[in-house]
Amino acid sequence: MEDHVWIGTNVSLKKGVTVGEGSVIASNSIVTKDVSPHTLVAGVPAEPIKENISWEA
Image (cartoon, rainbow, N blue to C red; front, side):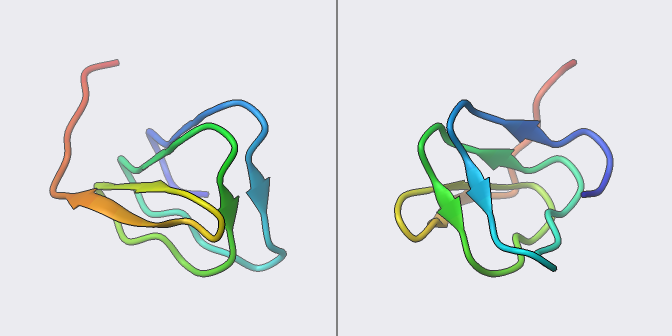
């Protein structure tokens, strides 16, 4: 898990998965593979929805 990651409720992460900096994981997603930095992922299994995202903390 890198910096500034936002994870929604009821998310499952497979062991060993890396979530890149600035990424967002939508609620109820199951992450089975690495998430690139600054990417929004969603679904079962989680797939990229949008890339090059940014958000203010």
